[in-house]
Length: 148
Image (cartoon, rainbow, N blue to C red; front, top):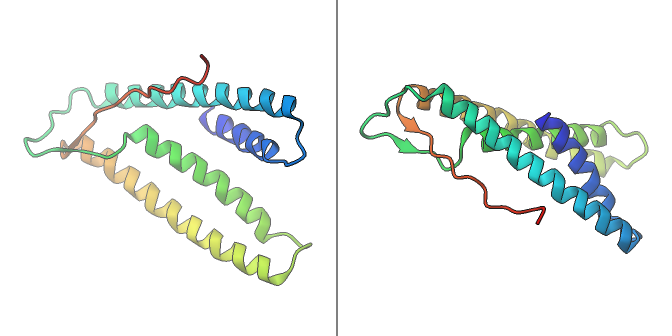
């Protein structure tokens, strides 16, 4: 569900970037994006609730530290990164473009793939650190208000 929200939103944002879009259509899509952002935020918070429940019996060490982001927001970044990789891979496989574009896209894809490895390892490490009491979870609820 989380990935689907991200994919739909990715494509909506592509549509709204069209310089020829009609203002009324742009406004409708912007409102759709706002609703999607609220759904995304709500779902990320549900994922964090899962982790809070999962780790509720863990007693953090006296020197345990907080992470800069919660596990769910890190997973959110991983979801968006997967979409970037998918679209960059599409660019790399195009047959209707010049060699320079393909080289540039391949370099970007390599960076994105490395980023995925690093981010996945960081998420695994974060979850292990929380499970071992080296880090503790503190979740700040988003104060974003997309729909009011």
